[in-house]
Length: 80
Image 1 (cartoon, rainbow, N blue to C red):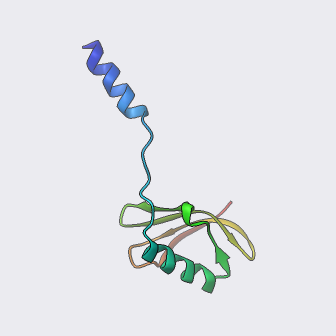
Image 2 (spheres, one colour):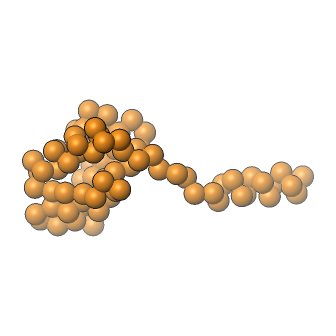
């Protein structure tokens, strides 16, 4: 029983690997952000559910975390 509990704790503590964006996605996100006067390091574009999470987006008016849906529409823009 102890082995099962220990294994479960190890698995729960393991980091979740984020899926990196492919070049086509990076291009779409970069174009969208440019239209918003923003930019992001491609390493900060991560798959989340059916969309994308953008961390540390730098815009003319500050730094944000942005979430996009599968159609690359902004669903959340949170100032840091």
